[in-house]
Image (cartoon, helix red, strand yellow):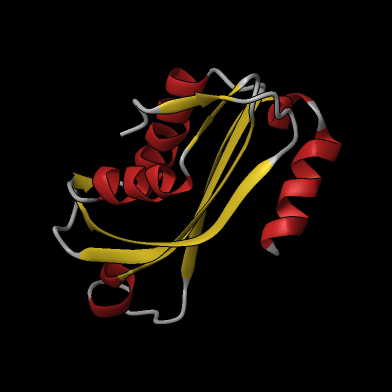
Length: 134
């Protein structure tokens, strides 16, 4: 998904928020849906913004769990762009929580995957979280 990159001398945070996704829980075979937020700090290489949204869409189109999905997206960005840092957060409603078992509608699950500068520098991570409103 991220094979087309552009050499760019940009070293400031790039953030995409509110990328919708739909997936199927591999444990219950029931949908979960929500929004992904992605941030990365380029180190001489950027990618077209639509490619990030497409990555979320492609990764979420198979049976998976939200925790793994979040990490896979971050790892794909890290591999392709080799940025100074990557952060991915996902907030989702799991229908297994709403319609099966405990039956608690309105409960969201938030996961994050943090790499590089976002992991090492609390101020960088806080800036991202402020930008995405978390």
